[in-house]
Length: 343
Image: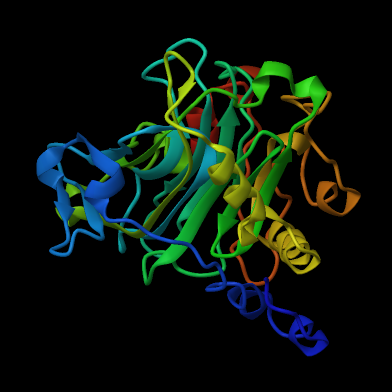
């Protein structure tokens, strides 16, 4: 169960409040070779001696990545991740599910993307989803974090069920998408693999491409441990389950992370009020009518311009310079949209 939140704690700083949710998940973990295989940049993928963790490196020759050995029809995908430090402009570290290698034109995807920055500026986190190839209808949200993700490990998790999707940072749910009929095929529904990658996104990742990867600081190292894969394995082509999924589905539904308790919902609301810097739901220039899954909250909406970007940061964050973009720019792909924010 989520920790009870005493009234006094609510009077303390928000980072302290969110940190109280850091270690409560009880999940089983697996070794790298039990559930994953290298994807690319084999020489830049370094397993630990005990096989329980892996380091992904980016140098001037290549990035690197790994993929789950199986596809999953819904599941819980999680890892403790530590990001590169110092100058990280142009770097993208991604932890996501996808089936784009099988369904090239109708792929589904759920994304955590970490976008690097110049020295002294924060890493930025982006979440996104696509269903049935809906890449022209990006559903990006961007945030800063209440901690430095390069200093220590934090757990990032994606829960995907037939009813909803929850993105977690530690035990704090930062985003929930509840499936509804109006979403239609935009809701991810086909089996997906789990991916983790590090790569050069100089063209867009930091200040719209203004700041590039500086390989004088290479190699850039991202570390992954406490790897978790929970769900029903499936043949992605024949849509045939690898076995009886009743037990896996029941375990997934009964797990602690399957329910957003009142305490967690309070933490999610506070996180989004303080740390969300862009939401497609409030980007009325891009979407005059919010997509059907959007829950427009007046307390959130008044913080954002019609570009979907936050008017200003509060709680000690840096003020940002926001540029007004043309309609063409505002309708870029998810990756391009992510890079438009200056810092």
